[in-house]
Image 1 (cartoon, helix red, strand yellow):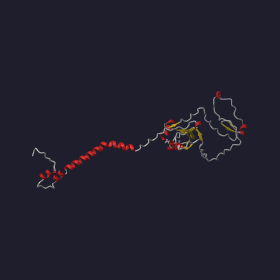
Image 2 (cartoon, helix red, strand yellow; image 1 turned 180 degrees about the horizontal axis):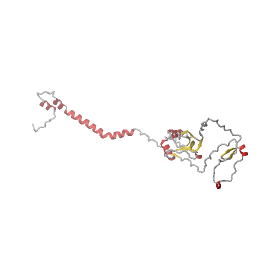
Image 3 (tube, rainbow, N blue to C red; image 1 turned 90 degrees about the vertical axis):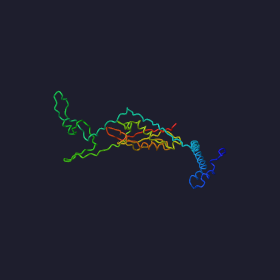
Image 4 (cartoon, one colour; image 1 turned 180 degrees about the vertical axis):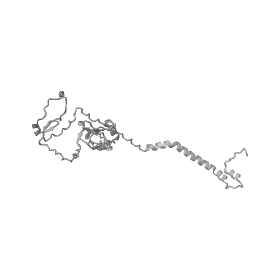
Length: 274
């Protein structure tokens, strides 16, 4: 018996082992299905192992079928420096007050001085004072000038109406032209970082220079931003105006010690990336 081949895994041995016993016990059923469960588990484990091993190759195959997104185009905007200030331009002279209606004769007030400091200067004659008014210096009058009326006694001087200077000056003829906080180079760096190249201009390979003019107000804000001269189109002109309107406040231009409105011109050069 021991020399013969015995198949211990044969299901008939189960009937021998479990003879006259309750076969509904779990061990009997487990041994009945042991071979099938073992084969099934081995098959599932093999399939899972093969899928994990082939996953990178499958992913690479699927990724190759999906079209890749085109990289975004980055456009460099090259700005031109503003024209240099002409130092030979002389600021306008101070405005002299209008001449009086009647003539004035110099009539200095009396001052007590030593004899050696007294100048040989004759005082105005009474005849001259009949046709002229005394003043600090001799001024020829203008008969067509308006008569300045003096307020009656008891009424103080009325507050004069302040006339605001709204003249728009040119940046070249300014005593102190307006400046960007941090310098003009910082302004161009900000514009280069803020400009977004229009898609229409990029698709049609449109580039060039947009000449922008604007007014720097007394408080430093930019108004009346517009394109001067020939326009490029394709959204480049509108993009230049949009960026300039987002600018921070400038340092206002000064004329005769007071802030004034100044017209400013700059070129914005749009260049397609190489």
